[in-house]
Length: 327
Ligand code: UFG
Image (tube, rainbow, N blue to C red; front, side, top):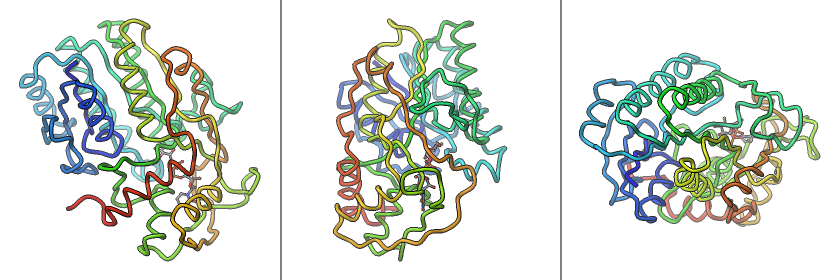
């Protein structure tokens, strides 16, 4: 297939684009390099630097790359906390970017669309693990922007017959030998913990230890980025046959912040000092995914469900690239 990967120079997008190339697909990457890195783009993928908010650039993209069979839409502002401070970056920009993309996708009869969605749709979970059809309560303008794109897809299927999959990632983590997580600023737990092990930070601050969990720290469902990439490929290959789908992606196991730090201590051999700070606004105590439907319908089976494996794959990349990609 010919696949357009927006955000294909970013963390999850670049790793998925590389998997697509390796599986024999023709890949076109479109990325504004806001958080992405040119060096992360697989050399056999076509690369266009551009911004989805620029309507003309999106039109040109589809004129110059005819015959796109499917789109994986990773490009997005992605931070819950930032979205609480700058809501329009999310409620305007993420929505405009996605709308421009969908407009051209429909105009060029693209039949398959895979959306990077989020666990932040479930801010007030009634049960754990969270099922894909559980009640949606976006936890932030970020989550709301993804929910709006999910709703756009609903209507684009009804009106234009576009098949879609909404993939709600829980906590994407881990790296591959050649590609890894390199954000500026870094806000995610695992890379921050590894920066302490690399001597780039003095300590990890735990955002609250008074949550109603076993050790008082927040529990999350960490899922390896390569397993996320596989879920994208399975969805791309199958939605024309099985129909549009919404999948929550995680391992179904929760790990606390302290457990993640302990796993990193074991993997790196570093003491990783910590300090307990106040809660971070907007953090739910526990988020665990139920991925039963994608396992049953598509045979998705995470290859790296173990926390230590996830952390050690991240350590391998971060210790080989202590300053991330060459700037
Ligand atoms: N944490 C710390 N200290 C840090 C960083 C994080 O204690 O320095 C804690 C957080 O409070 C949270 C856990 O580690 O409990 C994981 O935090 P991350 O920032 O790594 O990830 P989030 O769970 O906040 O965010 C992830 C995705 C978002 C998505 C969200 C859904 O990165 O895109 O899950 O809730 F929206």
